[in-house]
Image (cartoon, rainbow, N blue to C red; front, side, top):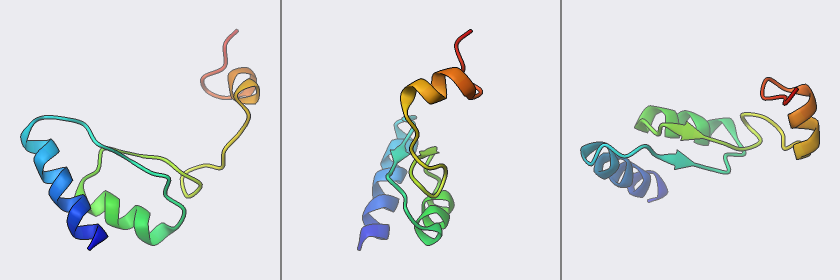
Length: 65
């Protein structure tokens, strides 16, 4: 049922040219399903573990210098 609902929502969003965001994804099977359905953006522990904002702003690709 969840996959069917996500697929319906994704289909409507595509027809309306709206980007979709799904999460939090905590296992690879859900990640694969959402990717196969065509969800544009996915977040959660399967992608990357949560980190404190100050650490991200100082050490990551998005660091502010």
